[in-house]
Length: 186
Image (tube, rainbow, N blue to C red; front, side):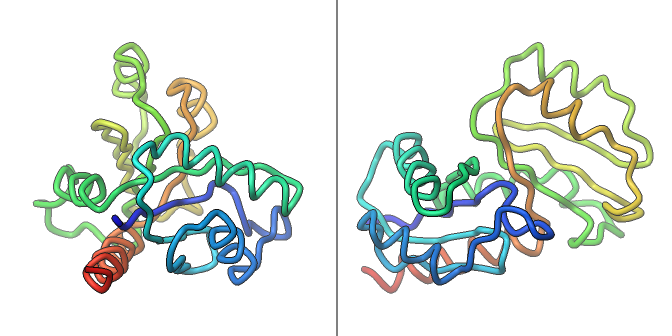
């Protein structure tokens, strides 16, 4: 069994697409995913599975959530190794003054095409800084996300793959939870 981190896109925002975490854990249990553990209210579930086809697993989770709650969020999954790799590739890691709560990693559901990557890299994003690497988009919001003029809708249309963002503190905490879950299972 390996630990997997799943992140739901667009749940529990304001009064839309609400899911209680105990009900979400029950959905994961119904799919025979072991020890589902939620982290904060934004749809992060860490669990154990023997499933090897994670894309198929993400679709199964989306199907089950749609059946139970009446809407279908995108579900992005990462293994511990993939999460560690995303953390290791943080393009802002060596820079002083980066506030972890203002650094967002958008985990993409698929690999964007080279043309999409080039378009993203050429976008004017000041004062925000945007870097794309693999299936992750790293965005630093020096003034916070609430004041940004960054055209996220245009970025998403360009990438042509769903994604969901988490701040750096959440990313590192989810890795910690996943590692503890997997270590406790051995």
